[in-house]
Length: 430
Image 1: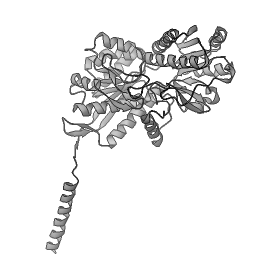
Image 2 (image 1 turned 30 degrees about the vertical axis):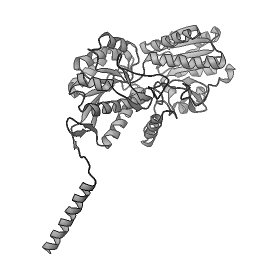
Image 3 (image 1 turned 90 degrees about the vertical axis):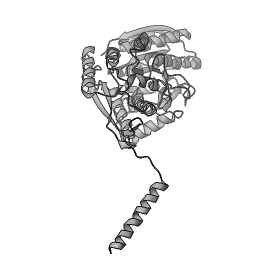
Image 4 (image 1 turned 120 degrees about the vertical axis):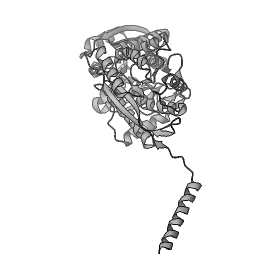
């Protein structure tokens, strides 16, 4: 009996040995987590959805075993830690946001930051903190060009900062080019602008205005509105009497839906280009319905608001979001950038062979060499500014896509390389 049992065990060992010889595999030990810090304002829907996107990317990476850190010979999972900066809440001082970031960094000791403070003013103040702690940061919300100005003022000091999303200059330029496509299609050339009175919104409006005037447009009105404005009828009446054919509205305050509702009810004889968060989501039609018909919108990086056929990763991103039954986004504008940021870090860590906090000065070079496909196209950074590159060719860079609402769907209409339809005028404009 003992001899028979011995022969059975011997045969099993032979089979197992043969299996390992026939199908070689590399087995990596599981290391301690790589800690990602996410300090931002969770009052804002954009940050809430951005966090979900980061968690989705982390879940995908951890389900595949984590990130291979070659210098350690292990695969390490990702762990997320957060801090509420509250900088997206009215009245929160910048210093309070800065203290929240500092507390998270000193207590949680993250290996890198993603998303970062929501409001541009708070992000500007955080730049010195990033430098102080030599903390690799893939910032994906704040849009102000001021951040590039700060970086270029002392690239060695601020080299740990990268903007892995659009900026308001890119957004403004794309807005201008989208609007100019309407001029080419219909012969329109008079523009009226309404800008929320905040740093990023004024910058986007200024960039749009400058670009369009260079293309032959005439700005017949430019009205800044205070955060919290809840009646736009007076300024819309100005737009009516100005003779404008295109109305451009930019901001992120919760009361902005009043503006496009009044635009439609007052039948203002302009097309409406609305650079406003909650109307850039596929969820918006369920909230606002036909009030959105014919409105042109611009979720910042291409594919973040709705899938684009020419951007395969955007289709994958939205399919995964749907398959996981995640809540529909109230504000999608840079949510895909938050998702891509995690994969940018993964890619750089695997090429570097070490985590960012081990040698942040050296890690910078690996981030600068980033070249991979993301939701918005090809992801690369401009070494002179640490800004993710955006233009109109998804094979060469990331892109920004404009859509028009049509009977409940967001239809890509610009740039031509990815457009799926031409712009249609609202009936009362014809």
